[in-house]
Length: 434
Length: 181
Image (cartoon, rainbow over all chains, first blue to last red; front, side, top):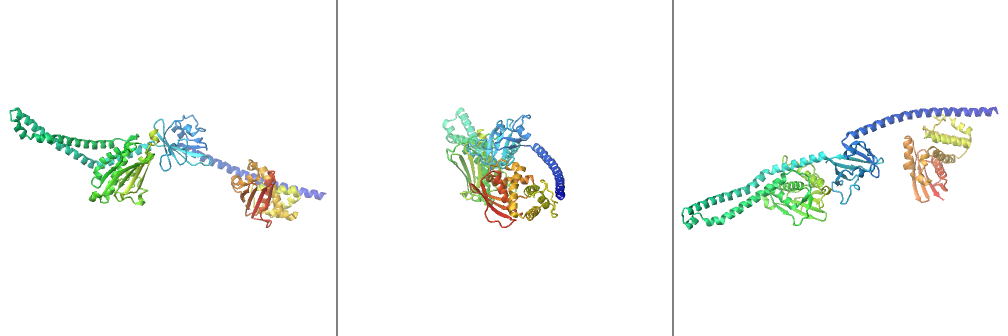
């Protein structure tokens, strides 16, 4: 009995000792874990503060959305951008409600094209698209979202006002640079009708002088027929109206050139209106005449009845001018001037129900396949050093894609040289309809 | 291996074989832990193998059957200790189908040092589930018992059988088939 008790006592003692050791080990572990947890919490808090301060500091609105586009977290910059009062917490707001005070401007797909017709701003909130809005105080903001993650969908709202302004200035600068480059040629073009006008006016000046002398002769008793013969009045009767007509034609020609210069020199406000493509093409042909007339013929193959396009006329003028001048320079660079009868620049147009496509073809050397992707990059040029800034096609792309929701591509054309294809949505983009 | 596996094993030994047997196997001098275990610590899995071998020697029971019995008991205890891991499941199939991608993921969040076995679960048809066990520790028999414990936990009339005969007390790979009746 005593042995049994001793055995039982021994078992209990060993069990107790094992339990005591286990408790000590557990306490030690818990203490270590507690310290680790404390440090981890400190690090997490520091990380949270860093993230929060960084989000506050960057001039970009930031938010996280849940699966139904409700704001889970938003930075103060975002609240300020959407015009929310400082004391209003945006958390819990539906994003479309939060954006209600902004004026929708455009929806752009990943590749820069305009969003599908009928796509609403609410449905367009997706990581593949960028949505542009105008704020009540006249700023432009761009909304982009990231892919849905386990913590929600990140969203950024970026103020594009300054960028738009700078892009506009760059565009104006390029336009003025182009006009400056063309100014010598334009002056020459203007000089031709002026010379024409001057020659005819000089002739008319002599005619007036002769007629007045004839009147004086007759008043002094001169024989009528003798006066007629002496001053060759029949010749005057025949030639004076022709001289007047020719002077007027010269005036019209000069006025057309001046009008084109005025249209190009006018500051671009970005306003969209209904524009006639034929007129824009004719103006570009007039103003660039000095560049192409010695290297190639220019064929404006624009059929009557082309649908009107809602577009920024100033922007399109710049595109037409850049593309025609580029084509002329390409032909000239390949020695086109020496054999100009064989060279041609052709501007043609086609349309379907939704889009108008303009083709700028030339008989120049074309664009090498390896460069076709890069020609629209800023500062890329195939011209000799000092001959081009590499901004022309980059600006054309910005005007067509960013401003009009269209697209512009380059390929080998049917005339053996390059073909630049410009496609514009016929309904205008949302900016025009906003 | 997590301490709670050892705690579960000792609980079962004390309940089924008594405190004398439990004391004998825990007094084995070769145990690095000295036979003291706490749920919150981790121990070398070789200690578990040593404990199973000692118990089989003392009780003269089949080591494979011992492990299977232990596995069945252990599932119930794990469910007691971690009710969140089993909450929301309506049956064994639903739980086992998410064990690798949900439960083991959460186990690793809670215990970053945990080494969970690889379980490949395949739904053969609406009433049949295939489970493939793989682990260098060789506790296929414990897995068999855990599957039986899971079925018992949900009170199901489901059989758990091996897809091929057992090849020994320690198996690194095994296949099981669960059939709902």
